[in-house]
Length: 180
Ligand SMILES: CC(C)(COP(=O)(O)OP(=O)(O)OC[C@H]1O[C@@H](n2cnc3c(N)ncnc32)[C@H](O)[C@@H]1OP(=O)(O)O)[C@@H](O)C(=O)NCCC(=O)NCCS
Image (cartoon, rainbow, N blue to C red; front, top):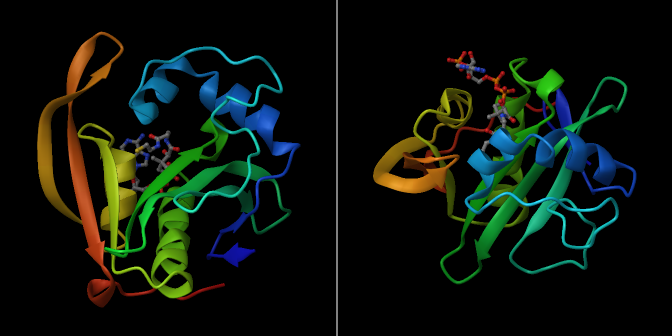
């Protein structure tokens, strides 16, 4: 397990899937805001669902997020779009509603940076989020990500176009947090 100050990132377990599917994908508004594609329902156990266990892929590394204190499941995290030529990847995070606003998101970003820069030897990490997602923007900025651009009206979300923000962090600018 990769350990931060408050949370750990471990492999996705089969028992995590229905919880993540119900609490993250089942929330149509939040799932639509995070996904970048139209929401649709998935039956329990569906192999097409966003949190289904799958064979390892080169470009995507999914994790489940757990509390270090007790091991309770609190969300999902991933490195996606891993590009081994340009040595870059994107970060994704989704916390269960009860786990938000406690500093876990900031900690997850820190652990994903450790995984990306130290474990994988990447040079650039990117966060893509909606311009009004203050919690995600701050979680990234707290870890040294800087806003690099705005794509105006790039995302169709629940009946309106919203701006999307890209933030980037380079390995040489990263200051690792003290690790638990
Ligand atoms: C985005 C998310 C991962 C952030 O994690 P979190 O644990 O809630 O965030 P933290 O508690 O670490 O807070 C980070 C910062 O955001 C601020 N913040 C947290 N929730 C906030 C909210 N609802 N509104 C405004 N600011 C908020 C905190 O005050 C903190 O700011 P600071 O660094 O200036 O003190 C989490 O809220 C989440 O899973 N949201 C739903 C899914 C999602 O949007 N995923 C990202 C898709 S790109």
